[in-house]
Length: 338
Image (cartoon, rainbow, N blue to C red; front, top):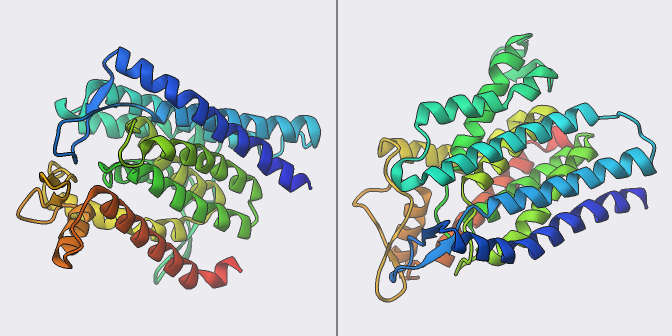
């Protein structure tokens, strides 16, 4: 019963807050000119931006309600509170960095790449300060290696920067980022539960609940875009869960689509966009002569099989690929989980 209540209260709050506040935010964003062009539509359409802020609001309130329940109802004292508030600090800093990037505008380059990396690395300081995770990691050939002080001061910032940066690469289609966040965080919540960190499961599901509510407004045709305030926060949470829960290997495996996306983006010197080229029939063609994104792979394969690529099909294709990777991950790592 206690576990049910721990889940019901924070998840319900996270979901309801986003559902109720997003329509208000859409109106306000349009009033102040915080709108972006929907790049995969043939006719120019402009949509409210930075909806990730509201997702972050729902997540934070849900998470704090979970903390309050543990402290005041279950009388669990300070158990895991240091880790929870360090996690919360990192996510809020990342959300702020993402908002700055949103306001500067991706068409104008946003934050400079070096500045962005440095700021995201700075955001990892709360985790470094509490020496989160375990410094012993398993390496091929070498086996278990204790990295000592190198783990908090080097591996944690690299992990946060890597996850945040790459999660932001596979984006640009209505509902894509929110859906990916739901899929990966749900999988990691299961991993956290199976590896003895049920409190991390609740935290992940708070974000999942907020993202599910957001997806109602973000799925094609989108009424609001997430912005970097969402992708930075979700990417950061994925990395934080892997670090605190000590399941970095399976988390990296789940991130295979993003590793592939990074490789494809690197072909285009990180400047080629992930969008398709919309046509008058409401379908998508390739924007370039070469493939620079998994989105381009999906467009190519859909058109090659005469299924006629469109925004919904591309998004669903990416989600399906991510789910297949996760299933394979559970099969490969089953001995360490069950």
